Length: 226
Image: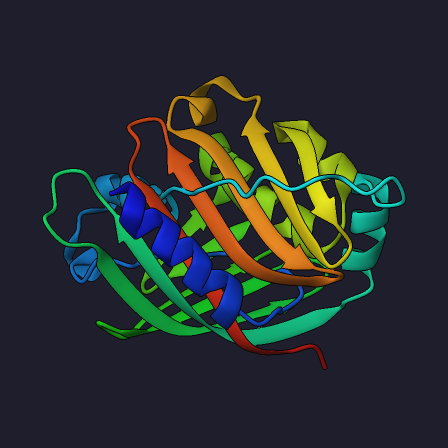
C-alpha cells in the first residue's frame, strides 16, 4: 500500500497541472439516483471522503499562509479536468473516476464526473444539488464544513478555513502543501486531515485521509483560469 501511495503521489506531482484551487473531488456512486433520501447525505459524504499523503518540505521565510491566501484570492474562476483514485480498505482494487470541474467566485462549485458513470454535482451558495436531490448545507454541518474547506481555499478566505480547521503550511511559493485538520467534532470523527498541494495560485492536488485510513487523491489537469 505504501508503495502504491508513493507512486501515486509522484505521478500526481508530475501530471497534475495547476488550476486555481479546485476542489471538490468526489466519486459519485452509480446508484445515487436510486437511494432513498435518508441515505443521500451519507452518500454525498462517502464520495467526498478519502485520504492522502503529506509531502514534507522546508518552509521558506517569505512564504506563509497569508501570502498563499492572497495568491489564491486572485483567481476568480477556473476549470480543469480531474482524475481521482480512491483506496477503500474493504476493496481489492482502487476506485478511479474522471471528469471536469469548475469554480466561479465566490461560492459556485461544479463537478461533472464522466467516468465510470455520468454524474453531476453543483454547489451554489449553501445549496447542493445532485440529480433530483437538493440539500440545504446549513442543515448538515459536517457536509458544510467540507464544502467550506474547498471554498475557503479557492477564494483565499483564511477566516472561513479557520472556522472549521487548524491550518499548517509547508513548502514554498513554487511547491506548497496546505494541511487542514478539522476542529469540528462530528467532522473530525470522519476526516483526519485534508491536504491540498499546489504552486503559486494554482492547486494541483487534493488529498483526504479518513479516520478509518481510507484515502484518496485527486489530480488536477489541463487547467485554465479565464
